[in-house]
Structures are given as structure tokens and as C-alpha cells.
Image 1: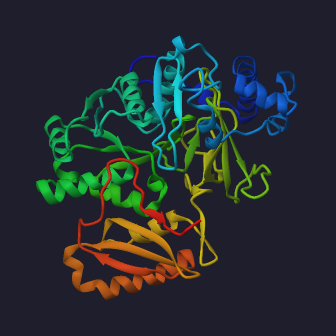
Image 2: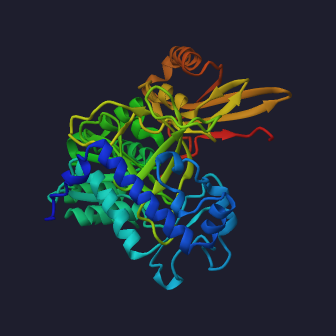
Image 3: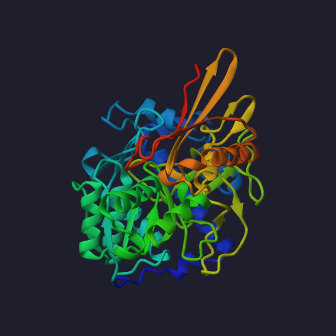
Length: 442
């Protein structure tokens, strides 16, 4: 395809029945590959009494054992070092090393062949093209090049699409903003936390108003749920005068979902991935809308270190709406709703951190930063919300406190100790933030 014309109507508009046939074929292929080439997968499936010839229907797929991060941590560090016997290719065929961020424990190492990396890049290109990126865009990359996959993937995908790429790796936040302004960058990608942080720095330290003084008109966010949280998206779009699109993926899986320009929900890239939703408690499949469950995903094109029925623990929900963009890839309703292992009981109530984010980010007198700390006082749970009030609203503390108390009770069914902190006193992050801290003894 020529630069700027990355639309695959054969795959992206395939009738759902034919798309499922393709998925079943691809699942059988990756299952057989892993069974034959990975000692880990061969033992896992042999112990379960399943071999390649047994996979004939989607019901057969649901009998295949799932894997999760704890299993992958147990594997790594062993021969062939450092990936262990999940590896399906000789070490000399591994060309790319990446690892997870480690925000939920020991990082997972990910091996890719060059073919794997090219396929993963193409999956990301589908996202950027659907969001309106074209070869005449000038993309700024406001992050340091590290061992996490997201930074590299955004760069390679933009490059493959024909965009002009401007790396901002060693620059600090102020220098990045000035470079965006100097070169008239039209798009960028970052975490929601850093998108908001950059806008704050531009206004408060440089006297730059992003909507009028910069040229960014498209922003792709990933790494945090904020891209699909309406209040957070609104803040980002107002701060930059740009459209903000959510994109989701992980180091182990790849880039499996994205919003298109119509923003009817997250499209699942069903030509590259099989996404299943399971009931959190029973494990039963959820095939229709209206019920949230945890995601189980298979990547079809990861050959070095296959990811087959990976229990991601992200909470998602199907949306049966047909997107006006014409793509038949199914939609998720509201993006990532949270994580099954993030949802915790506080005072006997199930709490999702994204519900707190929606409340805080919907109050314009508060800054973008906040923290939630859960502790235990004797036998009683105690939950504290720390927020920053924008200086010109300091005389409105009592009014804002009343709004917070009311909305938090309504959205989370809990009462909080609310602390108001000086503006810009809470920690800032350039990558994934850790705003929720559960300090109770477990």
C-alpha cells in the first residue's frame, strides 16, 4: 500500500461469520505451533488432555487452559535465558526485547522475532489510520525510549504509515513543548497523565496555551483507562484543542483495540486477535452486551513467545452497535472499565478506582492530579482522597468538598476523608501513574 493509504476493506469489513471462521483457523494454527515448539505450552495442553486436532469449534477453544502473569513470571529466568521454555524459536531468531512496566509486580519479559514485530506494528497502524493519521502528519513522541513497548510501537507505526516522526526522548517536558511549537507537530501519543501534565506545564511555566499556540490536533493515549473515561477525555481535549483517541494493548499481547474517528467505542482488531469475555466469578463466557466481565485474549501472530488465552484481568463489556465507520470489528462499550485485580472491597463495598477518577476529573476547580489511599484503623477501613484545588478557587473549598462528598457517595457508595493540597504538590508522572494505594495489611 502507498504511504497514507492504510485501509484494508477485505479484513476490516469482513462479515462477522467469515471473521469468526478466520479467527478459528488462526487459533488452530497458533495453538498447533505452540504445542509443537514450546515445552511450556506442550506440557500445559498435554496435562489438560488437549492436542491440536481437538480444536474444531469455539467451544473447544474455551476448554483450552488460560495463562496469566504469575505463570509467565515462574517461567522466565530459566533456559533458554531469559525467557524460559515458553519460547518457540531458537534464541538467535529473537530480534526484539521488551518488558512490562512492572506496576503490578515483577516485569514480564517479551521476546519477538522481526516478523512478530512487523505484525505488531501493522496492528498499531490500523489504529492510527482509523484515527485519521495520514502521511502528511508530523508526529511528536514526548517520551524517553525505554524497554516498554508502547513508545517504540507508536514510533514504528507512524513511520510505517508514512508520517514524519519527531523523537523527543532526552528532552524535558518544557523542551518538548517548545520543540512541538517550533516544528508545528500535528499529533502525539502519550499516557493521559502526561497529556494533562504537559498542558499544565505549557500554561503555567511557558505561558503557552496549547489550543491556540500549538498545532496538535490528534492525540492517541494508552497505558491508563483515562482515554475512555469521559471526564478525563474532556479535560484532555479542552486542554489541547485536539481530538483524543484511546488505544489499548499490552507488552504480552500487542495492540488489540482502538477507537476510530467515530468514537462509538473501542474496536477489537479481530483479524489479529481473539478477545473473549468471561464472568469474573464463574468463568462462563459472556457473548452479548449489558454484562461486564474480564478479558481473555489470544494473539494470532506472536510466534516467538505466543500469547494464547491470556487472562488479562481487564474488565470490558461488549457493545452490539455497528460503527458508522463501516468496520465490522466488534466494539467494546466504554473501553476498559478497570481491572479485576484492581477492584477491591472497602468497608464491604466493591470499589473501582476509575469511578473515583470520573468524579474528580468532572470538577473543573480541581487539578488533574489526585491520590487515593486506603488504610485500616483497627478493624475499620479508612479511605482518603487527596486533591489539588486550582489557586483561584481556594475560597470555594467548602463548596467543592460538598460536591465531592455527594458525587463520591453517589458513584462509589462510600464516604471519604477529603484532603485539599497545594496546587502542583502531588506527584506527577510521565508514564503510568499509581494514584490508588491500598496500604491495608493483607
